[in-house]
Image (cartoon, rainbow, N blue to C red; front, side, top):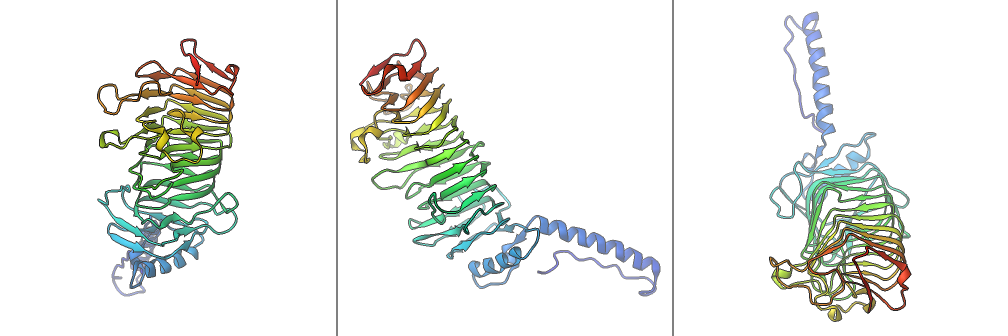
Length: 391
């Protein structure tokens, strides 16, 4: 690569002048230090040769992959496009200069790999991946990461921050261990469930995220789906789930905490959530704390979901054990938003599970908690002023 900074002092009296040689030696050390600091901030994609952005990225990945201490690849403040799947390696990093956002104020990184994804994980446990401060735009056939299931590689100890994803099929489907999502995220217009994640020991979106305007078709669709996640904190985030889409689903694992999530709907635009906004089908030691719900269960018989039991309440529990719902808030609009929750809709419906505690819940009207007749009254503990009806 070209040296980003150079400085030379003319030597008085020729190259044998001891004073001049000493000065140039000092300046040489300063130059080396400045160059090292420039590389530590990353290597610009545009510093590499290539007729297309993909050609430049090939050169950049080759250069970074050969370094013992890998610099980030800096994607600049312009529009660019990538059309080839790339396999990540330990320590790979992509960064931008400013926080990513869906509105492309700072950059537009188009990713189009129909039928596949842009970044793929090698077998095993790739580690130390960093992606931050970038805005990405996909299409209906492209995933950001190549989709994986629970038998695939596991991404370890990696960090993603200040990111935007617009118009992708999926963003991440795969297994994580000790992965952190930080900073502000903006995820919009996904064509299918954007996040389907397995694993443990993760920290997701503790600084916030807006996930909005899903573009999904019929069937079982979610904004965030956790099939088997353990010892992981999620939130606070703002989830908008319209029509047949459910905001978040938990199927198993243990030790998952949903913290301060706001489950909302595009009710003012005529797009309330038809069924449940939060679905828990399994898992042990699950905590749902200080979450907000608005606009759910507008027409639960129309969702088209494979199991009608999934849409019995704004928060529906069909399985799992040691589940705590603490401080949930259920709004019917409170006079400032339309599409008031229909009378009699359960705020919480318990169709299965064991050792379930419901504490300090609030609702615009009287909180409604119901259980299926197959669930014994002793399975559920509530505050003394909350009645659990059978229905």
